[in-house]
Every structure is written in C-alpha cells, then in structure tokens.
Image (cartoon, rainbow, N blue to C red; front, side):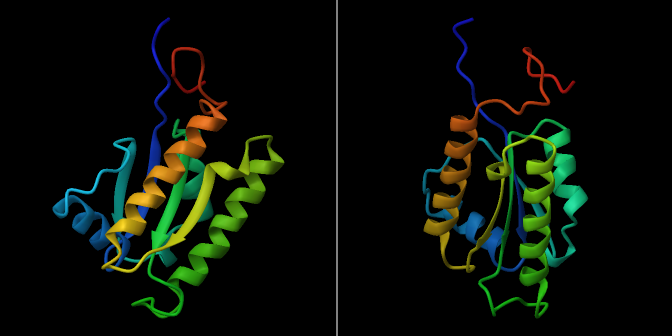
Length: 143
C-alpha cells in the first residue's frame, strides 16, 4: 500500500498552437509532469462537451483543452467555442457531484512552450490535490 497516487491528465491540444508549444517544450527539454496524455486535434472548436466528460468517465483524473490565444484561432472562433464547451463540462461535472476543477481551458501560443509546461504542471497538481477520479475504484479501475 506504499504506492503514491499519480493522476492521469488528458490534454486536447490544437494542431497549430498548443501542440506546437508542447513539441517545442520537448525540444527545449523543459520539464513538465509526465502524467499528461496529449491528444492532437485540428482545432479546439471541434472538442465536444461529451468528449471531455467521456475522458473523465474513462478514468482520467483531469482533462483540459489547450488552444490558440484568444483572437488568434486559425479557424477564427474555435477557441471561443471550446471555452463554452469546457464551461458546460464543468457545470455538468458539478451537477453530478464531481469537482468542476477537473476540467479547464488554456490559451497557448505556438511559441509559448513555458506556458504549456506550466499548464501541464498546474493540471497535474490540481488532479493530485483532488485525489483519484471518484469514478475509479480502489484499484484504479473505472467502476
């Protein structure tokens, strides 16, 4: 029982900015939490509320969307749509008794590898403080 809890965090990152920042963070050898599972998407505007909730249902301890800076979306308004979807997911999590802090939105430019690393560390720390996803059982399996 001496195991320490290490959260699983899913990050949906837009191809043009956040994913590029993540790649740059790796190239620059910036250290950030290894708990992040990055999923590259063309635009955060394609993220659906149910996709975020499904990540939690499937056992992620936290989920976040990382897109272009506000006003700089390559698909014009995708990051604004994503921000609304994250807000909806947070409201639904709260409604079912799960901490809404388990979901978040970040706006990260392609050149801001430091901000990507900070976001990854911040979400990992939030998940660590909240503890395991309440949908998991004692062995870490989804109920």
